[in-house]
Image: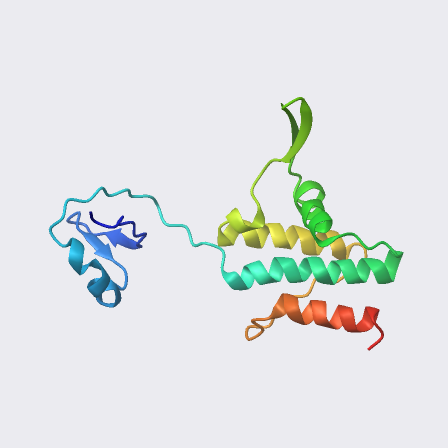
Length: 164
């Protein structure tokens, strides 16, 4: 029995309607076993996805805002609570309620940051930055070489909270 073949590739369609796969030389060896095999091909317009660096940025921003809120107001929301606040209050996402097994379940509608493409993510984070700027809270922007952004912020905050 053949193992399941499921690859997601990027590329473009040439004027003569041939698929031009990106980085084909790099993946040729992986695709070699399916040469000549009938394939189902699903084509969608490519949208650049959020990067892992952007993922670290949103969570680093949550940690930075948590620390600054504690310093400014004494309020110290949880990471998950503040992340939901970003989505609900700043981005304006709605809450809907469902009854499941006789219980009210509240669901935050709209995209998680991780589901946004790079343009949507940039626009969303710009709203977060502007929202907190009005309160005098600065949302840090990661340096190009800072791959451990959230860990750096958490470590700094933990040192301050624990007095060392």
